[in-house]
Image (cartoon, rainbow, N blue to C red; front, side, top):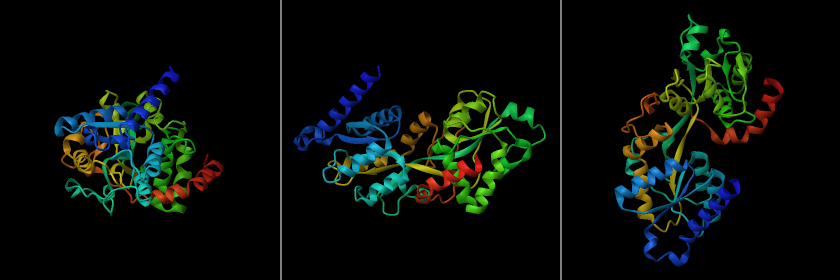
Length: 337
């Protein structure tokens, strides 16, 4: 089955590249909007179908990993094979912009969005926010800590009563946990940040490798408290689990972004797709599937998800997080765990 899946994936890549060839540039298919999509296939399919339904513009997308698609955008810079790069953290779009691979387009729907969701030069725009939060198993928490209020801040997690009752993934193997580590280092500064982490570690009962593990472990009642992405906690809550979701102040997060590839062969349609992705209708559809937080304040959220008005994000330095990673994880391995 794995070989069959790989073969089908390879055929999809060939088909996508074929309909982007120069020989097609002046054909009737040239109006088809071509998208490199980093977000999940289910979300991509639903969004592109709605876009076509609303505009009549046909789409063709290639779904692959962030690294693969960003590398494609860079290597194809002089002869782009797609019009849109959909999804991926802002740091990847910043990288593509630095290489001169993105068009400038400031959508009218980007007016009024948070500054962290809009590039200064108009080359990328965020359409949803992914941020860390605290998940609580309500019944287990009340059983173990009947006199303690729910934790509302990152500092509340340092209550000594929580010893062995918190679950956090291992930052050496999990990007989710590394984001949490950087959250504390950037929120408090290096010295106080490490002091915080050293005080938290004795309270953690388990360091699984998977970023999705804490949310699952609190849902199954193995731990009362877990650190996870808010959209994952929101999804499980809507599935009926007795989970409380807290979005602490001064937390770290990033936006999934959209950008137009430089020298797009279908620029007008690409601009319309950016406008579409920033619209309430598109973001409501995506929220229903991914449970992520829409950046458009007019987009209705799925009940239980976090609204953008509730988020208090730090000015997260992605470049610092990247450059410090080896040193931070070495120190974690030696001094913390």
